[in-house]
Amino acid sequence: MIKALRGMRDLTFDDGRKFTYIIKKMEDVAKKYGYEYIETPILEETKLFKRSVGESSDIVGKEMYQFIDKGNNDVCMRPEGTAGVVRAFIQSKLDRRAGERFRLFYHGAMFRYERPQKGRFREFHQFGCESFGEESVYEDFTLIQMVSDIFKALNIKFKLKINSLGCNRCMPRYRDNLIDFLKSSEEQLCSDCSRRVSTNPIRVLDCKNSQCQDILKGSPKLVDNLCESCSRDFEKLKSLLRDNKIDFEVDINLVRGLDYYNKTAFEFISGEIGAQSAIAGGGRYDRLVEFLDGKSTPAVGFAIGIERIMDIVELPYNGRDGYYMGVLDSHILDILLPLVHKKRGEGRVYLEYKPKKLKGHLKGADRVNARYCLVVGENELKSGTVWVKDLELKIEKVISMEDF
Image (tube, rainbow, N blue to C red):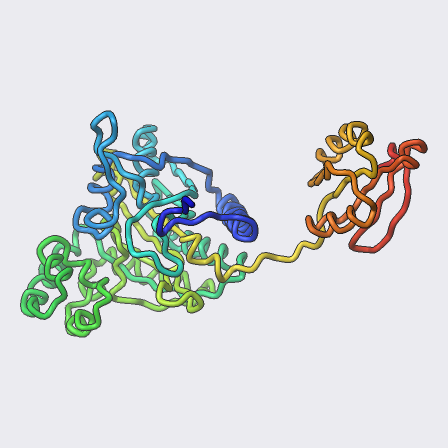
């Protein structure tokens, strides 16, 4: 028997219903904030992610589904959504429309070759929003508020962590201070962090190794090295969150897993999903458009892991829905088809092809959770009527086919 690949799974029945319910809720909130849908390809040139996510990141170094295609192109299946949206933004020449704002949302499958565990798969799905052209910290706050509204709509409890990663004025100074500190303890760092000291020392802050975390307790802090502009924006962000009753904590080691972030970084955490507690994250990436050969454009965005939250989202009970239709005699089925098609213009209709006794049809209606069970036999056919039972109110009656 052929099975799904390790780390990939089917979404069927309850999982499928929950998945579409979650996406619909997220879309509804994003549209209220003025965001429009964008769809980008699953397959992209590998260099897109090497230049955006960063060659020193674990995603590029260890996790990408990368291959040479039949045209001898170096391609990979997208490991995250932002880079593709930025590529589309530049390709559509939107970066050249100075002074305009573009707010886009997406959802779709992403791929990373890593060890599968609860809430983490090799094929997974993200919902994300990207805002281009707005440099105000109010936009950072608004995206955080949007994620908060999404989780409230899904009845998910969360904690918010924020940090500032500085800009190209204050980050180099901090980076040099951090390198000097890390080199003094390099032999005690894990192998990944030892490599990162020379490639991307900021990522050391994100290490989960307990020994590395103990070392970092004495490291220089990014928030103490912010320039005046970054410090002012970070204080304003905290003020906006307090004023709008969004609880948060400052996590001075929060750097996110991707290399393109600057200034605001944030994560939403859930205590209900085990070790993989991050359910959403994002921040500002003002230089990424320029890194990918576009015109310098301020940008900020976030992504939510759908699989991360599926186990803690409960589908609302909507009661019975739609119609179940059946016949007592096989020759009546053809006569019933036009009525079935007409009712499908109003909602969900399940048609049973096999003739059954009334009791069998009622059981069938129960199985598909229909609100109404409609049955037509010889008597109903002769009188131009249908037998209908409301399975929620337990009321049955015979009415004319025309009235139905």
